[in-house]
Image 1: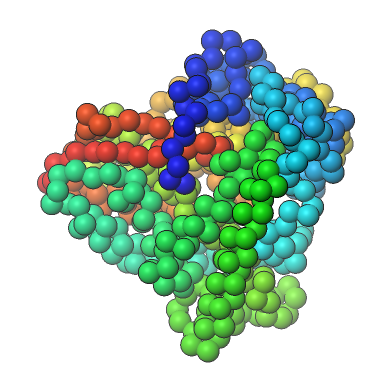
Image 2: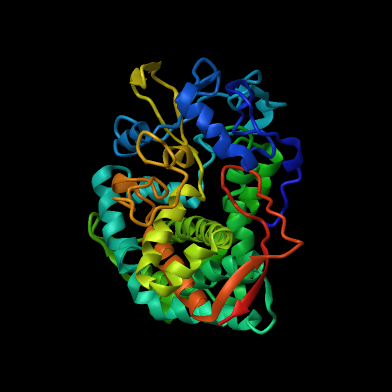
Length: 449
Protein backbone atom coordinates (compact mmCIF):
# COMPACT_ATOMS: atom_id res chain seq x y z
CA UNK A 1 0.00 0.00 0.00
CA UNK A 2 1.32 3.42 -0.91
CA UNK A 3 -1.07 5.60 1.06
CA UNK A 4 0.55 7.09 4.13
CA UNK A 5 -0.82 6.50 7.58
CA UNK A 6 -2.29 9.95 8.16
CA UNK A 7 -3.41 8.98 11.67
CA UNK A 8 0.08 8.14 12.94
CA UNK A 9 0.44 11.41 14.82
CA UNK A 10 -2.77 10.66 16.73
CA UNK A 11 -1.17 7.71 18.50
CA UNK A 12 0.82 7.89 21.70
CA UNK A 13 3.02 5.43 23.51
CA UNK A 14 0.94 3.55 26.10
CA UNK A 15 1.97 4.09 29.70
CA UNK A 16 -0.40 1.48 31.14
CA UNK A 17 -2.56 -1.44 30.03
CA UNK A 18 -5.59 0.85 29.92
CA UNK A 19 -3.89 2.89 27.19
CA UNK A 20 -3.13 -0.11 24.99
CA UNK A 21 -5.19 -0.26 21.79
CA UNK A 22 -3.63 -2.37 19.06
CA UNK A 23 -6.25 -1.29 16.52
CA UNK A 24 -6.30 2.47 17.05
CA UNK A 25 -5.17 4.79 14.23
CA UNK A 26 -1.39 5.04 14.27
CA UNK A 27 -0.96 2.29 16.89
CA UNK A 28 1.64 0.55 14.70
CA UNK A 29 4.31 2.91 15.98
CA UNK A 30 3.94 1.61 19.54
CA UNK A 31 2.93 -2.02 19.09
CA UNK A 32 6.05 -3.42 20.75
CA UNK A 33 5.59 -1.20 23.81
CA UNK A 34 2.00 -2.44 23.96
CA UNK A 35 3.12 -6.07 23.88
CA UNK A 36 5.10 -5.60 27.08
CA UNK A 37 1.90 -4.65 28.91
CA UNK A 38 -0.05 -7.51 27.36
CA UNK A 39 2.60 -10.08 28.25
CA UNK A 40 2.90 -8.85 31.82
CA UNK A 41 -0.71 -8.04 32.68
CA UNK A 42 -3.14 -9.41 30.07
CA UNK A 43 -1.73 -12.26 27.96
CA UNK A 44 -5.33 -13.17 27.13
CA UNK A 45 -7.22 -9.95 26.55
CA UNK A 46 -10.95 -9.71 25.89
CA UNK A 47 -12.44 -7.58 23.11
CA UNK A 48 -16.07 -7.38 24.25
CA UNK A 49 -18.82 -8.18 21.77
CA UNK A 50 -16.50 -9.01 18.88
CA UNK A 51 -16.85 -12.76 18.63
CA UNK A 52 -18.84 -14.81 16.14
CA UNK A 53 -22.13 -13.30 17.35
CA UNK A 54 -23.14 -10.16 19.21
CA UNK A 55 -23.20 -12.21 22.42
CA UNK A 56 -19.65 -13.53 22.13
CA UNK A 57 -16.27 -11.87 22.41
CA UNK A 58 -12.91 -11.66 20.75
CA UNK A 59 -9.72 -12.47 22.63
CA UNK A 60 -6.18 -11.33 21.88
CA UNK A 61 -3.63 -14.08 22.48
CA UNK A 62 -0.08 -12.77 22.87
CA UNK A 63 1.82 -15.74 24.33
CA UNK A 64 3.88 -17.99 22.09
CA UNK A 65 2.69 -21.27 23.63
CA UNK A 66 -0.99 -20.37 23.17
CA UNK A 67 -0.69 -19.29 19.55
CA UNK A 68 1.50 -22.28 18.66
CA UNK A 69 -1.18 -24.56 20.13
CA UNK A 70 -4.00 -22.88 18.24
CA UNK A 71 -2.42 -22.75 14.78
CA UNK A 72 -1.54 -26.46 14.88
CA UNK A 73 -5.10 -27.65 15.63
CA UNK A 74 -7.51 -26.61 12.87
CA UNK A 75 -10.25 -28.96 14.11
CA UNK A 76 -10.38 -27.56 17.61
CA UNK A 77 -9.73 -24.00 16.42
CA UNK A 78 -11.22 -23.58 12.92
CA UNK A 79 -11.49 -20.36 10.90
CA UNK A 80 -14.28 -18.17 12.31
CA UNK A 81 -17.65 -17.48 10.74
CA UNK A 82 -19.34 -14.28 11.88
CA UNK A 83 -23.08 -14.84 12.08
CA UNK A 84 -24.18 -11.31 12.90
CA UNK A 85 -22.71 -7.92 13.66
CA UNK A 86 -23.50 -5.79 16.66
CA UNK A 87 -23.85 -2.05 16.08
CA UNK A 88 -22.73 -1.37 19.65
CA UNK A 89 -19.63 -3.57 19.57
CA UNK A 90 -16.23 -2.18 20.45
CA UNK A 91 -12.92 -2.77 18.77
CA UNK A 92 -9.44 -2.98 20.19
CA UNK A 93 -8.19 -3.43 23.71
CA UNK A 94 -9.07 0.12 24.78
CA UNK A 95 -12.65 0.17 23.57
CA UNK A 96 -12.34 2.02 20.25
CA UNK A 97 -15.95 2.42 19.08
CA UNK A 98 -16.83 1.59 15.49
CA UNK A 99 -19.36 3.84 13.82
CA UNK A 100 -22.22 2.42 11.75
CA UNK A 101 -21.03 -1.15 12.20
CA UNK A 102 -24.40 -2.42 11.02
CA UNK A 103 -23.37 -1.16 7.59
CA UNK A 104 -20.03 -2.93 7.71
CA UNK A 105 -19.05 -6.38 6.52
CA UNK A 106 -16.61 -8.75 8.16
CA UNK A 107 -14.18 -10.70 6.02
CA UNK A 108 -15.46 -13.73 7.98
CA UNK A 109 -19.04 -13.22 6.75
CA UNK A 110 -20.08 -16.32 4.72
CA UNK A 111 -21.25 -14.08 1.86
CA UNK A 112 -17.80 -12.50 1.62
CA UNK A 113 -16.09 -15.23 -0.39
CA UNK A 114 -13.23 -14.52 -2.74
CA UNK A 115 -11.52 -16.82 -5.22
CA UNK A 116 -8.94 -18.01 -2.71
CA UNK A 117 -11.57 -18.92 -0.13
CA UNK A 118 -13.66 -20.69 -2.76
CA UNK A 119 -10.59 -22.60 -3.89
CA UNK A 120 -9.86 -23.57 -0.29
CA UNK A 121 -13.38 -24.90 0.17
CA UNK A 122 -13.16 -26.92 -3.04
CA UNK A 123 -9.60 -28.24 -2.96
CA UNK A 124 -8.52 -28.34 0.67
CA UNK A 125 -11.49 -28.37 3.07
CA UNK A 126 -9.72 -30.64 5.58
CA UNK A 127 -6.22 -31.30 6.88
CA UNK A 128 -5.36 -34.21 4.61
CA UNK A 129 -6.40 -32.28 1.51
CA UNK A 130 -4.61 -29.19 2.77
CA UNK A 131 -1.37 -31.18 2.98
CA UNK A 132 -1.96 -32.73 -0.45
CA UNK A 133 -2.67 -29.32 -1.99
CA UNK A 134 0.49 -27.85 -0.52
CA UNK A 135 2.65 -30.83 -1.45
CA UNK A 136 1.48 -31.10 -5.06
CA UNK A 137 0.44 -27.60 -6.13
CA UNK A 138 2.50 -25.00 -4.27
CA UNK A 139 5.55 -26.65 -2.70
CA UNK A 140 7.26 -27.27 -6.06
CA UNK A 141 7.07 -23.55 -6.85
CA UNK A 142 7.18 -21.46 -3.68
CA UNK A 143 7.91 -23.97 -0.91
CA UNK A 144 10.81 -26.44 -0.78
CA UNK A 145 11.07 -26.24 -4.57
CA UNK A 146 11.65 -22.49 -4.56
CA UNK A 147 15.37 -22.98 -5.16
CA UNK A 148 14.55 -23.53 -8.85
CA UNK A 149 14.10 -19.73 -8.99
CA UNK A 150 17.52 -18.83 -7.55
CA UNK A 151 18.99 -17.48 -10.79
CA UNK A 152 15.82 -15.58 -11.70
CA UNK A 153 15.68 -13.93 -8.27
CA UNK A 154 19.38 -13.09 -8.36
CA UNK A 155 19.04 -11.53 -11.80
CA UNK A 156 15.98 -9.51 -10.71
CA UNK A 157 17.78 -8.32 -7.58
CA UNK A 158 20.84 -7.14 -9.47
CA UNK A 159 18.73 -5.52 -12.17
CA UNK A 160 17.01 -3.37 -9.55
CA UNK A 161 20.32 -2.47 -7.92
CA UNK A 162 21.68 -1.48 -11.34
CA UNK A 163 18.94 1.15 -11.56
CA UNK A 164 20.33 3.19 -8.66
CA UNK A 165 23.85 1.95 -7.87
CA UNK A 166 25.49 4.98 -9.51
CA UNK A 167 23.37 7.60 -7.74
CA UNK A 168 24.54 7.15 -4.15
CA UNK A 169 20.98 7.35 -2.89
CA UNK A 170 17.81 5.29 -3.11
CA UNK A 171 14.23 5.29 -1.90
CA UNK A 172 14.64 1.74 -0.73
CA UNK A 173 10.97 0.75 -0.57
CA UNK A 174 9.70 1.93 -3.96
CA UNK A 175 12.98 1.27 -5.81
CA UNK A 176 13.86 -2.10 -4.33
CA UNK A 177 11.88 -3.77 -1.52
CA UNK A 178 8.53 -3.37 -3.29
CA UNK A 179 9.40 -4.17 -6.94
CA UNK A 180 11.57 -7.20 -6.14
CA UNK A 181 8.76 -9.50 -4.91
CA UNK A 182 6.51 -8.10 -7.63
CA UNK A 183 8.98 -9.15 -10.31
CA UNK A 184 9.66 -12.50 -8.68
CA UNK A 185 6.02 -13.45 -8.25
CA UNK A 186 5.11 -12.36 -11.78
CA UNK A 187 7.85 -14.61 -13.13
CA UNK A 188 6.87 -17.54 -10.91
CA UNK A 189 3.16 -17.38 -11.71
CA UNK A 190 3.70 -16.59 -15.38
CA UNK A 191 2.32 -13.07 -15.61
CA UNK A 192 3.94 -10.48 -17.92
CA UNK A 193 6.26 -8.09 -16.10
CA UNK A 194 4.65 -5.16 -17.91
CA UNK A 195 1.42 -5.99 -16.05
CA UNK A 196 2.99 -5.47 -12.62
CA UNK A 197 1.06 -2.19 -12.04
CA UNK A 198 -2.15 -4.19 -12.49
CA UNK A 199 -0.93 -6.90 -10.12
CA UNK A 200 -0.13 -4.19 -7.55
CA UNK A 201 -3.63 -2.73 -7.89
CA UNK A 202 -5.26 -6.11 -7.41
CA UNK A 203 -2.86 -7.06 -4.63
CA UNK A 204 -3.85 -3.88 -2.80
CA UNK A 205 -7.50 -4.85 -3.21
CA UNK A 206 -6.84 -8.30 -1.75
CA UNK A 207 -5.35 -6.89 1.43
CA UNK A 208 -7.87 -4.06 1.77
CA UNK A 209 -9.52 -5.61 4.87
CA UNK A 210 -6.14 -5.95 6.57
CA UNK A 211 -5.18 -2.34 5.83
CA UNK A 212 -8.42 -0.38 6.05
CA UNK A 213 -10.66 -2.77 7.97
CA UNK A 214 -11.77 -1.68 11.42
CA UNK A 215 -11.02 -3.64 14.56
CA UNK A 216 -9.63 -7.13 14.84
CA UNK A 217 -12.34 -8.49 12.51
CA UNK A 218 -11.16 -6.17 9.71
CA UNK A 219 -14.61 -4.72 9.01
CA UNK A 220 -15.07 -2.90 5.72
CA UNK A 221 -17.90 -0.58 4.80
CA UNK A 222 -20.29 -1.72 2.10
CA UNK A 223 -18.73 0.83 -0.24
CA UNK A 224 -15.23 -0.52 0.43
CA UNK A 225 -16.47 -4.08 -0.05
CA UNK A 226 -18.07 -3.18 -3.38
CA UNK A 227 -14.83 -1.54 -4.54
CA UNK A 228 -12.83 -4.57 -3.45
CA UNK A 229 -15.12 -7.03 -5.21
CA UNK A 230 -15.06 -5.00 -8.42
CA UNK A 231 -11.26 -5.07 -8.48
CA UNK A 232 -11.12 -8.77 -7.66
CA UNK A 233 -13.55 -9.51 -10.47
CA UNK A 234 -11.06 -7.79 -12.77
CA UNK A 235 -8.32 -10.03 -11.35
CA UNK A 236 -10.42 -13.16 -11.92
CA UNK A 237 -11.08 -12.18 -15.54
CA UNK A 238 -7.37 -11.48 -16.04
CA UNK A 239 -6.27 -14.86 -14.66
CA UNK A 240 -8.92 -16.73 -16.66
CA UNK A 241 -7.56 -15.07 -19.81
CA UNK A 242 -4.02 -16.07 -18.84
CA UNK A 243 -5.15 -19.64 -18.17
CA UNK A 244 -6.62 -19.81 -21.67
CA UNK A 245 -3.34 -18.52 -23.12
CA UNK A 246 -1.27 -21.04 -21.15
CA UNK A 247 -3.47 -23.92 -22.28
CA UNK A 248 -2.68 -23.02 -25.89
CA UNK A 249 0.95 -22.11 -25.31
CA UNK A 250 2.29 -23.51 -22.01
CA UNK A 251 5.49 -22.13 -20.51
CA UNK A 252 7.71 -23.08 -17.58
CA UNK A 253 5.58 -21.27 -15.00
CA UNK A 254 3.07 -21.99 -12.28
CA UNK A 255 -0.09 -21.17 -14.25
CA UNK A 256 0.95 -23.49 -17.07
CA UNK A 257 1.62 -26.20 -14.49
CA UNK A 258 -1.78 -25.69 -12.84
CA UNK A 259 -3.63 -25.91 -16.15
CA UNK A 260 -2.17 -29.34 -16.84
CA UNK A 261 -1.71 -30.99 -13.46
CA UNK A 262 -4.06 -33.77 -12.38
CA UNK A 263 -4.90 -33.07 -8.74
CA UNK A 264 -4.21 -36.42 -7.12
CA UNK A 265 -6.85 -36.45 -4.35
CA UNK A 266 -9.68 -35.87 -6.87
CA UNK A 267 -8.02 -37.45 -9.93
CA UNK A 268 -9.00 -34.49 -12.10
CA UNK A 269 -7.65 -31.25 -13.49
CA UNK A 270 -8.33 -27.95 -11.76
CA UNK A 271 -11.13 -25.65 -12.82
CA UNK A 272 -10.32 -22.13 -13.97
CA UNK A 273 -11.75 -20.69 -10.75
CA UNK A 274 -9.61 -23.03 -8.65
CA UNK A 275 -6.53 -21.87 -10.55
CA UNK A 276 -7.58 -18.26 -9.91
CA UNK A 277 -7.74 -19.12 -6.21
CA UNK A 278 -4.20 -20.47 -6.16
CA UNK A 279 -2.94 -17.40 -8.04
CA UNK A 280 -4.83 -15.21 -5.56
CA UNK A 281 -3.02 -16.89 -2.67
CA UNK A 282 0.34 -16.33 -4.36
CA UNK A 283 -0.33 -12.61 -4.85
CA UNK A 284 -1.77 -11.92 -1.40
CA UNK A 285 1.02 -13.82 0.32
CA UNK A 286 3.92 -13.15 -2.01
CA UNK A 287 4.15 -9.37 -2.26
CA UNK A 288 3.84 -7.27 0.86
CA UNK A 289 5.21 -9.74 3.42
CA UNK A 290 8.55 -9.96 1.63
CA UNK A 291 8.58 -6.24 0.88
CA UNK A 292 8.13 -5.30 4.53
CA UNK A 293 10.64 -7.89 5.73
CA UNK A 294 13.38 -6.54 3.44
CA UNK A 295 12.66 -2.94 4.46
CA UNK A 296 12.84 -3.86 8.16
CA UNK A 297 16.12 -5.68 7.59
CA UNK A 298 17.60 -2.57 6.02
CA UNK A 299 16.62 -0.52 9.07
CA UNK A 300 18.08 -3.10 11.46
CA UNK A 301 21.41 -3.12 9.61
CA UNK A 302 21.59 0.67 9.33
CA UNK A 303 21.06 0.97 13.07
CA UNK A 304 23.72 -1.68 13.74
CA UNK A 305 26.47 -1.23 11.15
CA UNK A 306 28.78 -3.63 13.02
CA UNK A 307 26.21 -6.34 12.34
CA UNK A 308 26.23 -5.41 8.65
CA UNK A 309 30.01 -5.80 8.57
CA UNK A 310 29.86 -9.09 10.47
CA UNK A 311 27.35 -10.60 8.06
CA UNK A 312 29.05 -9.08 5.01
CA UNK A 313 32.26 -10.85 6.01
CA UNK A 314 30.54 -14.15 6.78
CA UNK A 315 27.65 -14.77 4.40
CA UNK A 316 26.71 -18.00 6.17
CA UNK A 317 25.16 -15.73 8.80
CA UNK A 318 22.64 -14.22 6.39
CA UNK A 319 20.09 -17.00 6.88
CA UNK A 320 20.19 -16.57 10.66
CA UNK A 321 19.86 -12.81 10.27
CA UNK A 322 16.80 -13.28 8.05
CA UNK A 323 15.13 -15.54 10.63
CA UNK A 324 15.86 -13.25 13.57
CA UNK A 325 14.68 -10.17 11.67
CA UNK A 326 11.45 -11.97 10.79
CA UNK A 327 11.01 -12.71 14.48
CA UNK A 328 11.69 -9.28 15.95
CA UNK A 329 9.89 -7.35 13.17
CA UNK A 330 7.11 -9.62 11.95
CA UNK A 331 5.49 -8.23 8.78
CA UNK A 332 2.08 -9.66 9.72
CA UNK A 333 1.58 -8.73 13.36
CA UNK A 334 -1.74 -10.43 14.02
CA UNK A 335 -4.79 -12.07 12.47
CA UNK A 336 -8.20 -13.11 13.76
CA UNK A 337 -8.15 -16.40 11.90
CA UNK A 338 -9.40 -18.92 14.47
CA UNK A 339 -12.36 -19.43 16.78
CA UNK A 340 -13.15 -21.67 19.73
CA UNK A 341 -15.49 -24.66 19.27
CA UNK A 342 -15.61 -25.37 22.99
CA UNK A 343 -14.81 -23.58 26.21
CA UNK A 344 -11.04 -23.15 26.49
CA UNK A 345 -8.55 -21.96 29.09
CA UNK A 346 -5.48 -19.95 28.11
CA UNK A 347 -3.08 -18.68 30.78
CA UNK A 348 -5.72 -19.42 33.41
CA UNK A 349 -8.34 -17.32 31.62
CA UNK A 350 -11.56 -18.95 30.44
CA UNK A 351 -12.39 -18.31 26.79
CA UNK A 352 -15.95 -19.41 25.95
CA UNK A 353 -17.10 -21.35 22.91
CA UNK A 354 -17.78 -19.10 19.91
CA UNK A 355 -15.01 -16.62 20.69
CA UNK A 356 -12.79 -15.28 17.91
CA UNK A 357 -9.09 -15.56 18.65
CA UNK A 358 -6.85 -12.74 17.49
CA UNK A 359 -3.46 -14.41 17.19
CA UNK A 360 -0.82 -11.77 17.82
CA UNK A 361 2.19 -13.25 16.05
CA UNK A 362 4.30 -10.14 16.56
CA UNK A 363 3.82 -10.37 20.33
CA UNK A 364 4.43 -14.13 20.45
CA UNK A 365 7.71 -13.68 18.62
CA UNK A 366 9.03 -11.44 21.42
CA UNK A 367 7.48 -13.40 24.28
CA UNK A 368 10.07 -13.33 27.10
CA UNK A 369 8.83 -16.72 28.30
CA UNK A 370 9.96 -18.24 25.00
CA UNK A 371 12.90 -16.09 23.89
CA UNK A 372 15.72 -14.84 26.12
CA UNK A 373 16.36 -11.14 25.53
CA UNK A 374 13.47 -11.23 23.05
CA UNK A 375 14.10 -7.87 21.40
CA UNK A 376 17.77 -8.61 20.76
CA UNK A 377 18.81 -9.99 17.38
CA UNK A 378 20.93 -13.04 18.23
CA UNK A 379 22.52 -14.96 15.35
CA UNK A 380 23.46 -17.77 17.76
CA UNK A 381 19.94 -18.24 19.10
CA UNK A 382 18.84 -21.89 19.19
CA UNK A 383 15.96 -22.79 16.89
CA UNK A 384 16.21 -19.65 14.77
CA UNK A 385 13.26 -20.63 12.59
CA UNK A 386 10.80 -21.46 15.36
CA UNK A 387 9.19 -18.03 15.24
CA UNK A 388 5.53 -17.72 14.24
CA UNK A 389 5.93 -15.23 11.40
CA UNK A 390 4.85 -17.83 8.83
CA UNK A 391 2.67 -19.67 11.37
CA UNK A 392 3.39 -23.32 12.25
CA UNK A 393 2.01 -26.77 11.55
CA UNK A 394 0.44 -27.90 8.30
CA UNK A 395 -0.98 -24.44 7.60
CA UNK A 396 2.24 -22.51 7.44
CA UNK A 397 2.39 -19.86 4.75
CA UNK A 398 2.83 -21.84 1.51
CA UNK A 399 5.18 -19.22 0.09
CA UNK A 400 7.57 -19.06 3.04
CA UNK A 401 10.24 -20.87 1.01
CA UNK A 402 10.41 -18.32 -1.77
CA UNK A 403 10.12 -15.39 0.64
CA UNK A 404 13.09 -16.65 2.65
CA UNK A 405 15.02 -17.25 -0.57
CA UNK A 406 14.34 -13.71 -1.80
CA UNK A 407 15.52 -12.24 1.50
CA UNK A 408 18.71 -14.30 1.54
CA UNK A 409 19.54 -13.45 -2.06
CA UNK A 410 18.73 -9.78 -1.42
CA UNK A 411 21.39 -9.38 1.24
CA UNK A 412 23.97 -11.45 -0.60
CA UNK A 413 23.59 -9.23 -3.66
CA UNK A 414 23.44 -5.97 -1.73
CA UNK A 415 26.50 -6.84 0.33
CA UNK A 416 28.38 -7.74 -2.84
CA UNK A 417 27.92 -4.17 -4.03
CA UNK A 418 27.18 -1.87 -1.08
CA UNK A 419 29.67 -1.01 1.65
CA UNK A 420 27.25 0.89 3.85
CA UNK A 421 23.67 2.18 3.98
CA UNK A 422 22.76 5.30 5.96
CA UNK A 423 19.61 7.25 6.73
CA UNK A 424 19.31 10.65 5.07
CA UNK A 425 18.19 13.86 6.81
CA UNK A 426 14.85 13.34 5.04
CA UNK A 427 14.35 9.81 6.36
CA UNK A 428 11.12 9.50 8.30
CA UNK A 429 9.84 6.10 9.38
CA UNK A 430 6.08 5.85 8.95
CA UNK A 431 3.88 2.77 8.81
CA UNK A 432 0.85 1.84 6.77
CA UNK A 433 -2.48 1.37 8.55
CA UNK A 434 -3.83 -2.04 9.49
CA UNK A 435 -2.32 -5.21 10.89
CA UNK A 436 0.86 -5.28 8.79
CA UNK A 437 4.01 -3.62 10.09
CA UNK A 438 4.88 -2.00 6.79
CA UNK A 439 7.39 0.82 6.34
CA UNK A 440 6.02 3.21 3.73
CA UNK A 441 9.22 4.93 2.66
CA UNK A 442 12.94 4.61 3.34
CA UNK A 443 15.20 7.31 1.91
CA UNK A 444 18.81 6.12 2.13
CA UNK A 445 22.30 7.13 1.16
CA UNK A 446 24.90 4.45 0.50
CA UNK A 447 28.54 3.86 -0.36
CA UNK A 448 29.52 1.28 -2.95
CA UNK A 449 32.26 -1.28 -2.35
